[in-house]
Image (cartoon, rainbow, N blue to C red; front, side, top):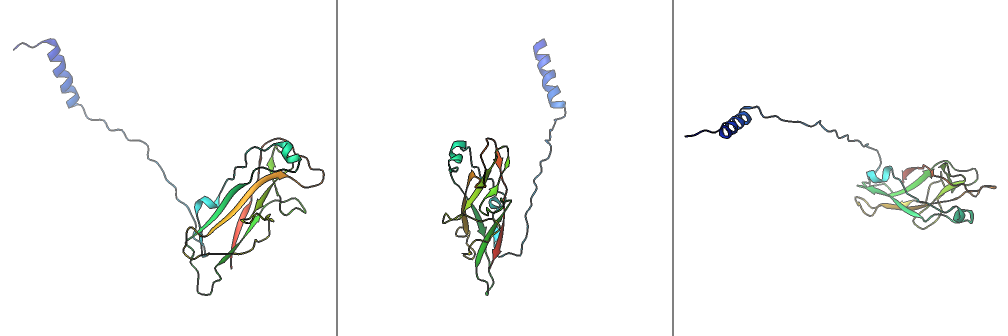
Length: 182
C-alpha cells in the first residue's frame, strides 16, 4: 500500500476536524417588554386606539389661505370586551382636550414651523368637535369587539383668529381623549 503526501494531509485534516471541540455561538438574548393597565371602566381600549398618529400629509398654503383645508383623514377609537352591571346605561361619551385659541373651541393649535394652522376634528356625522366639551353619548353593545367603534376625522386648516395668515413648514398637534361611561 502506497501512501502519498496528499493522503497523509487528508488524514491529518480529517482527524484534526474530528478531534477539535465544536464551537457554539450564542447570540445576545433579546428582550420583550409588555405593558398595559387594568381600569375600573366597563370597556377596554385596543392598543392601536390609545396612542395614534393621524397623517394629514402636505397641504397647499394657497388652499388654506382661501379657506380650504386638507383632505380629512379618518381615525377611530375601538372599545372592546364591554361588560356592564345590571343598572348601567351602556353608553359612553368622549371629550377631546387640547390647546385651543381663545374663542375657537373647535380649533386645536398646532406647533412647528407652520404658522397659524389648526387641527379640526369631526364626529361620525361630520359635525365639528369642540375641544373640552363632551360629545353626545353613544350606545354600546356588551361584549362586542366590532360594534363599539367610535369614528372621527381630522383636517388641518387656517386659524380663524383675526389677522392670522399661514406660513409654510411642518406642524403637529396633540389632543387627549377621555371616555365617560354613563
